[in-house]
Amino acid sequence: MIEKILITFLISISPFGEGKFGIPWGIKAGLANEIALIVGLSANLLVFPLFYRSINFLNKNLLKYKWYKKSAIKLSLRARGKTKNFVKKYGVWGLMIFVMIPVPFTGAYIGTIAAYIFGIDYRKSLIFINSGVAISCFLVAAGAAAIFDAVF
Figure 1 (cartoon, helix red, strand yellow):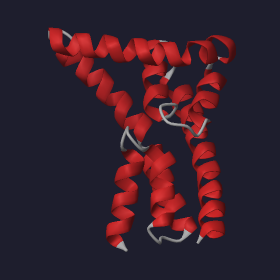
Figure 2 (cartoon, helix red, strand yellow):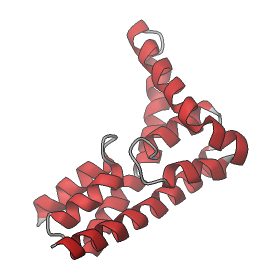
Figure 3 (spheres, rainbow, N blue to C red):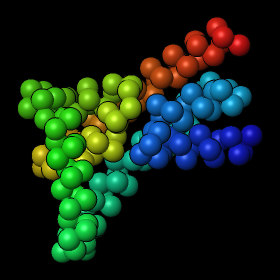
Figure 4 (tube, rainbow, N blue to C red):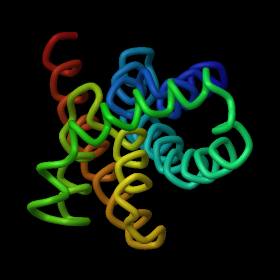
């Protein structure tokens, strides 16, 4: 059981999975729905504060290197392109809406980059992005539980 919890946590904190994949994996692997939700949500809620601080640190120390600058600009343009309409129209509420959509590449990582590049206040970003994460995780957990209970 510890192994399943750890894998659920790691998938849920990863930029390739987040809670959108971690929670269903945990439920499918045999964790109780509530455990999968708590583990996946906890991991996904850590993304914003850890990643935001990482962006600050990396930009301060690595932006002088061409390879880093090129990658950072590419990722920033991608995040801005995906979130611009949401943020322009709704501000921090737009970040929450963007992050809560439970489809790939609309999660906390892109939301965090968007908050950083649009210069949105850290505390506001934390509240609204993590609110979006929570809503998304609850939607995914409810959907996964319904699907797996109906199929198996």
